[in-house]
View 1 (spheres, rainbow, N blue to C red):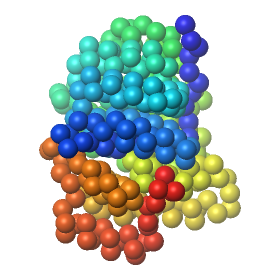
View 2: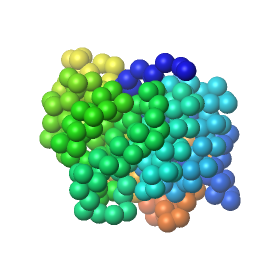
View 3: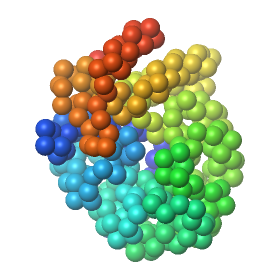
Length: 308
């Protein structure tokens, strides 16, 4: 049995998923985009929120992992999203990721039922960990209450750490509340929990507080600058670099995020297939494409192949 993976840190991206005309995953383009991100020193959080991961079946996600590893991409740079509402599905995909040597798995809480207790969420994660039953498992919790509507409390994180130690390797905090991210770092970073901000907007504060980095959607389209700040966060110009990142993030946040990123990739590559999304999500409408062009010109944003 291979050794347990090292803790993940740095900049990762929920890799946007290219689709073919029949809405199947465009595997060659997926591999190419992942390779570009790795070349920019961005890790691969495939099947995240901005990957449309929850619009994909377990079989599709398994096939993507197989395609990426067969293409020679390093599994230890991958943190696939394996969360879902059905425990057996989560266990199956998590086992696959562990067997392939992935650096970790990012696990949403079960998100259909709302208002569930910490005891219920603790039981869910316990079932997953104990059924996978592999000491190589490194599970990263995914706190994203604006979307999932099922938050992971600070006390729940502590309970899971108490029970499972290093198997609970980290957390992505996409709650958008800096106080919560800061509290996670203050309470649990000293116990080895890798705390990732869910947006580069909080990257500098996260690094200064002792966090691990960020897992950010816009690392798909602005990777070099985000990685640069992560590597140079102690520099005298770190605040200026953060401000520059914020301008690009604000630009994308003014539009539906996933369609806007895919639109930017279509412009950069000349491949119209990048504009495809799986319903209920839809491509950026023409009027918003025009507005995007105006805002991009104003902030000086232009994605090129060399940039990714």
